[in-house]
Amino acid sequence: MLMDSKKPSYFPKDFMWGASTASHQVEGNNYNQWTVWELENAKHLASTAHRRLGWLPEWETIKTKATEPSNYVSGRGVEHYSRYQEDFDIAKSINLNSLRFGIEWSRIEPNEGEWNQTEINHYKQYILEMKKRGLKPMLNIWHWTLPVWFCEKGGFKNRNNLSHWRNFVQKVADELLDGVEYVITLNEPNVYASFSYLNAEFPPQEKNFIAMARVYWNLASAHKQAYRILKAKKPKLQIGIAAQLANIQAKRPHNILDSMVTKIMRYVWNWWFLHRINGYQDFIGFNYYFTDYYKGFSRVNPKTPKNDMGWYMEPEGIYPLLLRVWARYKTPIIITENGTADQNDIYRQWWISETIMAMERAISEGVEIHGYFHWSLLDNFEWAYGWWPKFGLISVDRHNSMKRTLRSSALWYAGLIIKKS
Image (cartoon, rainbow, N blue to C red; front, side, top):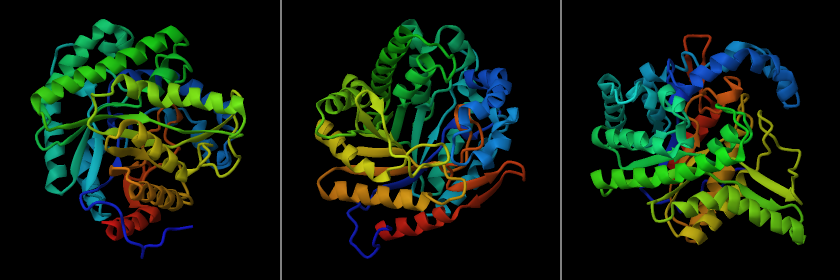
């Protein structure tokens, strides 16, 4: 059911209506630990695609891409690095007033202690062009990709390496804060730590709980260190992270075991990191994609509806999550990512509609929400899945000169923004 546009809007006039991107997923021609890993693993990922992905609802339509090694190589990206002004113009045309974007550490510091001023100037111009169009920049310092030299030193697993992180953040503070009011230090530290050092789906593909715990702990320290550096440079800067939070529920609400497991999972996945950095956030930024139901120690989600990646979709699940976040922290909230993989554009309008209604309901109950950033502005490289998942408001045809086309859901979203502004 779509929302009634005639109802009054609870969204404040300065609400940030935006979309998100990440540097490695759209720029193209990067060189970092992910690009190295992609080239080493593309053939393996393609040859095992049917075993890993054959159960997906859209397998028959994606299998040609999923079984092709080139699908798993970011390569030219979607050429956002060179076409960002065109992409900003499109974003403005659908009434967005904000964009979340990432900067690429490996471009700025390709070798230890070696700063590339050309790349720094690129991001300065990037921010300037965004501002020229009336788009408020939300700068994301780190979105999973790392310089190769930093990884060779052990990455975030080695606490001594935080000195290199501090140097990088200081360079960002010195060079890239003009015109920027909002900064995200880290994207989804819980996903990075668990998928890289426990599930072994992401590089460096370690299966070591102790290594995972060390990385997670060090990332909490990395955020607090970055917060201090950024605040010293620009005290009024609004700083947070983009946590990945899930609406975790008991399958049997009155079952003691289900309720206990739910509380444990909520703390481990949602709250531990936010508690560690409490007092070092000016807003609570979080990404919402999942509602998960637990029956005992097993996750038992409904079988439908599912998106192209097989994720169960419950967009309205963001409502109880907003209430819990607000009750715990009483700090302004920004939805830093939210969307669905939907190549045929069947569910995206419904997803956005249900999400906005849930947000509006939360605002009406006193929850302070400052912005909503849809994931994503453009079709992008979806990490270990490659190019076949389609999250973009803007479709990108990588086989036809990177042609940009607005999806119908994007045009609908543009109209919604006007009604709610």
